[in-house]
Length: 192
Image (cartoon, rainbow, N blue to C red; front, side, top):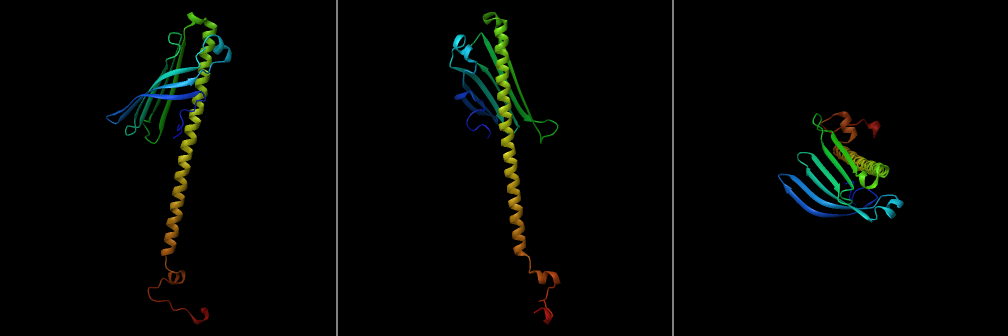
C-alpha cells in the first residue's frame, strides 16, 4: 500500500513491465524502471548526459510462504558503472509475528575510464542517493503499517461499542434486574 504511485524515490519516472507470471504460488514480475539522472549538474553537463537512467528489476513474491525478494541492476552506463540493489522481506524464522526486511546496494565504478577521484565521488553519491531512498521507503512503509494498525484498532473499538450498545438494549429494565425477580416486581406504594 505504501507504493501506490511508484516507489518513494523522487527521481522515479515510470515502469515498463516485461513479464508478470505466477507459478506454484510465486509471482514473478520483471520490469524496467526509469529514473531521472540524479547526478549533480556539472556531471550531467560534462560526463553523463543521459536524461534518465534505466534499471532492470525482478521481483519474486509468495504471500502464502510470506516472502518477497527483488533485485535490480542499472542498464545505463554499461561497463562504466554497475549499481546493484537487492531487497528481501520474509517471515522471521523464530517468531512468525515478526518480519525481516533487508536491503543492500553495491556500486562499482570503473576508475580506469574516469579516474580514481571521480570514481570515488560517483560511488559515494550513489550510496547517498540509495540511503535516502531507503529511508523514504522505510518511512512510507512504517506510515502504512501504522495506518493499518490504527484502522484495525478503530474498527475493534467501534465493534466493541456496538456490541456493548446491543447488550445494553437487550438487558432487562434496571428495577427488575436489581430485584432479580422472575415474577412481576411489586414495588412499595411509597415508590409510586
